[in-house]
Image (cartoon, rainbow, N blue to C red):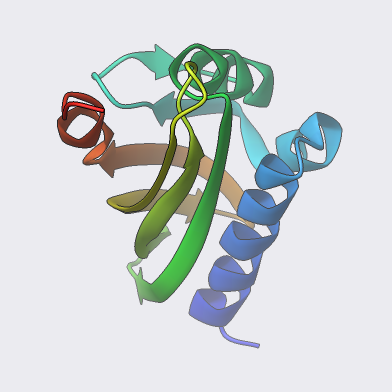
Length: 128
């Protein structure tokens, strides 16, 4: 398995554990000093922080992964995961089809950085 294939598998496994809210399993994929930049630019450092952040934004959240790309450099592997979000807002309204991009940097088989972008704010602002 190449570094890029292994990194893609790690990102997919991390996202699956995160979606299942298996905090311990997801945390094992993160480097000890990992940084996660969530929507709005806030930086957190653990899976518990990710779950707490999304808990205030969504009642439930899931991802439909449409594409995963990886590029290796001399220092790390960068993985881009693109797709759509689905779930429920805190008020119970459902949503789907919200675009997202997650960018990961991995070194030595661990996620050092995850940057998260999505169009949730634009969708949430729409009238019910």
